Length: 187
Image (cartoon, rainbow, N blue to C red; front, side, top):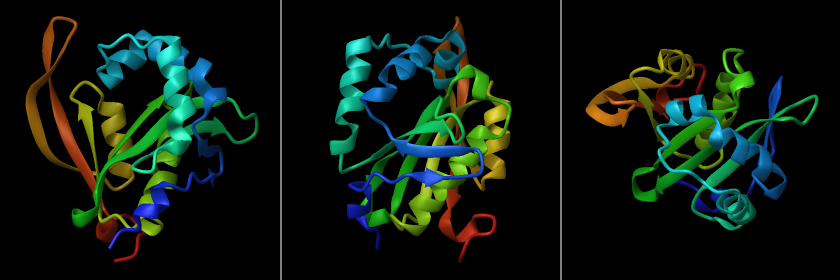
């Protein structure tokens, strides 16, 4: 049985290089800048143009959302904003939820995303008591797919031509990590 109250708690999760902290208004400007980055938009499949006000309101309300967990990824040494991630769409009877992450361009390719993903998965499995965490990744994002696989995610399916981007259709892979099958995890 999951502990749904754990989503109301907004933890600080610390790794070797990153710290996950509750998303707040202080992250809004950097979050908005990242939402405008063309490569971030492509990797997240975001067609929507978010305004600064929308992002600020989202960040401001993050602490009050009891049905999901939104965290900023910060550099542990400098506190610099490296991106954000979320655990959402929680299905208590089935003990599963969805995961997403978006890093700023300078934070990719250095293992930052993998470390942040491990921290969130540990929290999802050991504190919230989820059994399954799923995500979606586009077929053109092989780097992210490899990183997710290192964190214990496995491809479960493919949604054919589910994203239309730059005049072409792209497949979306559905991946999931299971509490009982995570590398180094308890059964």
